[in-house]
Length: 467
Image (cartoon, rainbow, N blue to C red):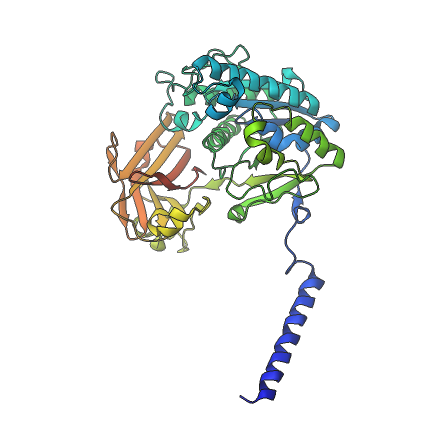
């Protein structure tokens, strides 16, 4: 190629790039990174706002601005704090200067954290009579959901070593550490208070108590709505724990807060609540009331002191109806109109190096559909083919007139599990008769994969489906 040909091509490429950049600038969004102002503003609360928090501090980190705005508008605000955060060993060691904290020390920590929340909320405009401490076990809510549903088999907390709340400030002293009790307490608050706006933990939050409290809240809300058709509150989810979130870390009150890229999917519609400069500074003051957490988590906690807060609307999904298809191959799943059945959940878990290196340990989609035969087909799709050395688990929970029914199947070694899950290529699947689930009106599904000596490597979030 002659030199002038090369020069001509180089000039034309430069002109094309400049033109594209100018077009992008004129349209305003092509190449400029998104900011918090690109998000829609969250609808204003009506008359009653309910904040559901897993631990003492989450209500402030996630929703201090929302609380202050609601109080200023004359909206009644109540806060439910499900656990007292009494199981954080390192914070307890730091607070009481002990390498080996006692059960009494963990309870002291729980009492201290209750007071921290009360002080912070009072600054935000919420009195102590509007705060409900449920007193459930820190890091124990997933166990209540999966393994300790009945009151006859309560969970024993790790730190305090108790099976019911030992705290004088407890919403219901008759409750025990079971899924039934927690659901009953949430149901009682929803029915008596009847909020028109509820915020709760996002299902994609990786902290076990956050997704645990989130799924309990969604179930309690669904049951309350079924009982009272007139009760239709707005519900939005907030995120606290997620890899790469918030960014940048540290006190940046001048910056906006954006959702992590891993949760920018169609089913997550994110909204913002703007904070004025004075509200941002008040939120910072409120965060500083959590003295027991500041020494170990200061930078992380201050990262939520921003110009806005984030909330996501999680859409409820109906259970798809399958007219044809093989459970072992989701590509063949069709509805009555011959359309492909879409996943009920895309990949929403945080990526880690170990999972990226093992395509057999990375879920990329979760499928569930009811067959014409009255059976539930569940399939979790992997990035690569299933591996014999890994253990795959499918969990299903049915909720209906006959109560709650748990179903667990495993492909691989699992003590005490009688049901077998199956693998075919890149799918882990099972088929369950609806009768075995109690002919439920609500179905929850989840998939997990564990590696030998590693533990859980990947999981889908719990997905709620209405039938």
